[in-house]
Image (cartoon, rainbow, N blue to C red; front, side, top):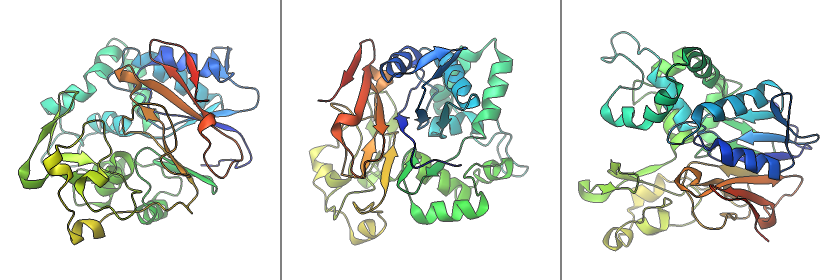
Length: 325
């Protein structure tokens, strides 16, 4: 995947079917709809994945982004929700003990329900979009900046590129992911979902979206974390008695660290809130919970080597355009 490091890019976080907010965001960034495609005379959009699920206008979002990509006006990464849709529709290999790569369990069905319902009656669209998802790369690296949906693991990405030079996956890779111990499954988990840490003592927490989980999402850039609370990176806070627990030496040894001397890195996935801003001088999350009436966020990237707060733009879901000044 070729990225021109000298070009201006508008990097856009998780849309999740919020097509109207996306149209407002693109318009505010100077894109105009011409010939049915949103275009900018000088810049290109890059979407960080999670176009589907949860939101009210999933089919419209898919058409908008796909048409921009097909016209050379945008690029798009795979998010974990595109992976879910792709794996939901991909038959599992013989002998795996399941019918599809992603099991059709009640939990998994709930996650993909809105996408399937909104594409019901449009079987051609569903087929075409599932095929398109398989062409989406798991990561992009332009040298001076990098893009991945959830977590940049350099060692894992190096191995991925040995197997899949353009960071896109084939059917065999998809089917290998039915084995949780395979590289394919570990790669998808790490790059598209990040690093989940089990809650202690078999504890579970129910999030605001109604899902009960025994893990929590963690930072992969924290330096010298000492407690569970130092690592948590999700909207739902840990109870104080958990947040104050010390990390073991084994837990610390298993963590990644994205240093401030690394290239600029942009991720989505983590349901941030508040005013968009850098997480550190070279790292930004662009997912600000748009589908939960948050913000659909873009970062306007030019030639800067340190992230600048004034380059974050966003559209309030149900509102207008905003710029952090």
